[in-house]
Length: 369
Image (cartoon, rainbow, N blue to C red; front, side, top):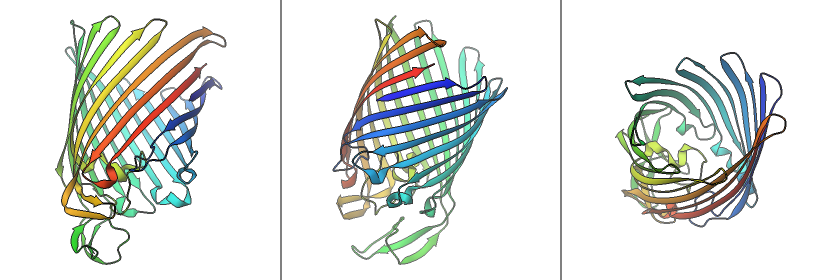
């Protein structure tokens, strides 16, 4: 359930308070998942200058049956626009409970987007740079830079073609340590924080990855639209680090668990949009993706892994979304949006700890005034 209240304090100040309530059968994508209700409390305050805006955003997550996973995330942002260029900077922090404070992080980022047109093709050039610091696991401190280009072309047949590509670079700020795992006589280089016998240091690696995406959207009728998409990621050098001794994949914890720069991947999907009577919109989608991790060994059993093999995953997901908006005039031009969402996801892996499934359902109510 999402309840959102938005109000204008003055000509320059805006504030939004949102309450979210959801039910998830496996929020942390574990082999043995725990179902729980999750409450989210959001606050957003912004002040508009003539050509720029400053804002503060905060979110507290409350897990009904998993109280040790509660967290607070907040961000201070400053952004603006000049002509066809938008730019901004953010500083954010996540604070977890003492049991999970190893996942705390601090992050700073700057970004820009430039829109322009070449004949009948619309182009968007974007770039960003960010620094991420993990106070409890400094081996993951990193600098990341991205640059991407998106092209959008529409045709009289009511067809739209979208193509995009990007290059991503990540540099760790600390050196990696090589350890010997005496439990199974395997030698490997990874982050094994439970070991106390470092063998040698290697230079901090730099990771480069290229990704691209191609999407075709077609209007089938005045009220029906269909889109198909294909995407691919390819590592060009090295691989991201991973924490091997933590036996589960955490959902949205941070990039240390499922960093997009730790695998090669290809995926495809289809989306259907249907406009219904009474200002209702129905959307549904199905996606599939295959990943090959280049720096993670395979857990053949819960506590035994084989460093001679790399982890490989195949994920499938489907979702359906229904939206209805009511417009009326009370304080000014107001609206109430009702939403309903259901999502299913399953992940098959050759590594024991990454086989999971989940179901997610939510109801939403958003009031804008």
